[in-house]
Image (tube, rainbow over all chains, first blue to last red; front, side):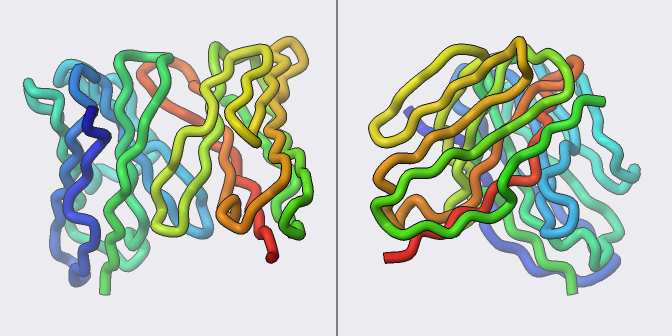
Length: 112
Length: 109
C-alpha cells in the first residue's frame, strides 16, 4: 500500500511569488491535514480537509490556502511568499477524525 | 487549548544505553501518537497509543490517560535511533494534531 506522497520534495522561490504543494493521501483515507515546521515554531497545524471540505484551520494568514479534490488529493497554496515562509511543509492523511495519522516526506520550501 | 510538553528536550546516549522520553498533556485526549523524525524530515509512526502499553522491538510506549502522560522507552539504543521524537494529540474537531516540541536524541557509537 503506497504511503502519503508529497510533491515536490524541494522548492526554491523568490519573495512575492506564489507556490502550490501537492499531497496524495493513502488510498481510502479521506482526511488530509497540513503542517508547517520551522526551527523556531515547531510543528504547527495549517488546515484539514475531509471529503473536500475544510473542517479546521490554524492560525495562519489568508495567504495560506488549500483545497481537496474528489479523489482526496490535496493542494496547498501560499501566495505573496515571504522569507518567513521558508519551512518544511508536511502533509498527513488519516481514515477519518481521531484515527492514526500518517505523514508524507514533506516539501522543503526555501524563499529567497 | 491543550498543551503538550516533552522532556527532556535533548538527550545524548552511548550506543547500547536505555532511555525514557516523556510526554505530558494538559487535557484528556482520545488518542496519542509517537513519531520519529528522520534526517530527511519525514515523521515515521512509532505508536498510536490512546492508553495502555504497546511494544515494537526495542521500543515500547505507555500512556496513562487518567494522569495525562505518555512514556516512550528505547532500549539498547543504536545510532540509527538518533533524531527527534515527537508526541502528538488530537485537539478539538477536524483532524488537528497538537505536537510537543520534541526530544532530540543523539546516540554516539
